[in-house]
Length: 291
Length: 291
Image (tube, rainbow over all chains, first blue to last red; front, side):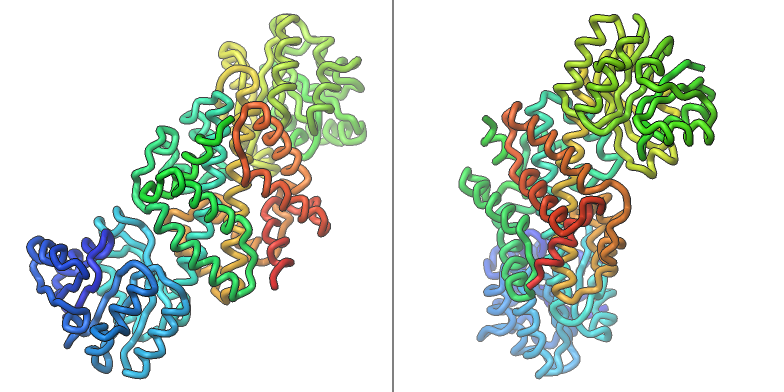
């Protein structure tokens, strides 16, 4: 059993840190809003520190799951950042969905202190975090990966090494790019089906047997058809992720016309008040545009 | 066992008509190019007629599977069309992917002669036709459907009634709209993955476990990654289908920005010589545009 710190008790981090306790690890947490850290401690035990730096002190593994590149820099590299207090041989694991650039930046600085670094964004959403069934896309050194994997498995069912530092973030970008296309296609399909007066349930039952099938079709069609958009990952966060992917694409020279367009469609969802709706709300915008 | 005619022995119709023979039906065929009808007869037995009208004479069921609305009108409503020789109580089943308008037009004319009509476009491609595992999306009257279903099951594993005449075509349009989004999203994802230097196989292994998963990802990723685009349904045919959907959308007032865009992307695939490539060749165009 390991001595670990968990920094960032958001919708994802809160249950993930809880799973670490359930698996017998000795967990110290830090959260920007301290009352939430106190609530976590009341629920799971463990201990709370007031800075990332204090939380990281003497730990074998430090896990981070915060909002974006800036938050990540602050809690790892900032004045009270975790890296200040990590010792040679310890490993920093970042679960934030962030840029590959910030991952490489932290990787280099960690390496200079002989601290291991893994970029390890997750998929599976809030339900995956709560049920300990996340997928973790990891970039970094194989020996660091092998050490961290059993701990990460406290809250994940699939933990894979995809390449050097940054490869986890890049894989997460591929994931979000594919989702953008699937969700927009499915939204247009359902919007058309309603306009055509079809029975959505029957249509999906038939077309989900073949080449049009997708996880989104099987898991989101029903709520979409009912105009319910409160099932997890929010539009604001999806735009953050798509922006990361589009910025990386500018650098690596890839051409993402649909991804750029869907990002703009999400901005229209925001414009009609959908910032906190889930990603399937692309349909809401189409329905609003119906002639 | 029924006396049936099958009109149109293309890539799909040829094996479909063969399955009817294998299931013990008495099959008469017609094909525009007669040598292909003769080849079919040499392989399966049955008989060949020189016009749709002659083929249809005295049959309980007439099946059609031709190229487009015009072909369909010609072989059903034209001077030597099947409907001229069909008697009250017989049923005309059209497997062409066509407009809902032409389906309704034929439905009305058939009805005037007390002939049943079902629009019944299929999915599952050439492999589905050859293996008798098609999905059939049917529109029409329930009693006609119940009579035709057992015969159709000679080459289909899923035969569903979606609503009145036209509902089969409309459902097929939903199918193609969803596919357009999935394939473009997947193409951008793989294009980005290659630009980012990732291992495509590992990436797909991980992301296909979650919200980015699709039939296309599971069944086409490998050939796409290798730049092979000879697995079935051709770009020319997909553009025909998307055009049908976009025309219907103009009428029913639905808004299909991605579908319209992907149709244009397929025109770029045609421009680089990909008319006969399969639908996953959207990736080829992206790879060509790489900086």
